[in-house]
Image (tube, each protein chain N blue to C red):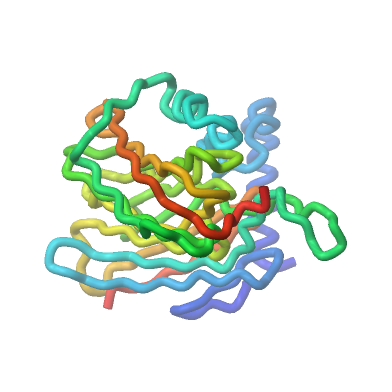
Length: 117
Length: 154
């Protein structure tokens, strides 16, 4: 199994993909911020040699709070490189676990989780 | 073979044995719900139609789009969408003048605030549309964002 710790986990074939998670417990909601290292190639850009860089982008990011799905984010290649998301859900408590999972168009995937501080 | 590979093999086995023919349509299990045709649409109207099964969107003043008026770099344009509409099921972002307008659709569970913030690419200055599905109906709002340097390689 790939190395796992609280701030970083790598499960990907490319082994370079990181999921950063920040959680903030506020009065009305818990705010989730996540940044996933990913090229998000559209398939329209060319490399230095003039060859098309094939499309490579995250298609789904799932956010779960204690195993309940909070949001399913369906992404296309027009989302910026290294996708950053911010969402807010109700009902979070200190110690609850928020899990972020992603899968891209090549079938690579990754997951990471963090407890609400 | 590590645990992960074993799990993948198990998944593959499950797929081919129990789902038989269906497995060929679902090569990637988690992607069954990814609306490929909508994401590949080249016009905003066909993207919306494919994304929301032909529902017509009504303009709404209850959707708020925050974004820079002028984005210097079209490859990173931040956008924040929120709404006071009740029972919001999803929020989608479309960029009219991008080669493929649909950027993302956020499917929100009950208890998730009608709020999203993300960063998108824009080829050129364009209206950006926020599409909100609430109570089974479709609402939209639009905002122009000027882009100095395009970010789609188009």
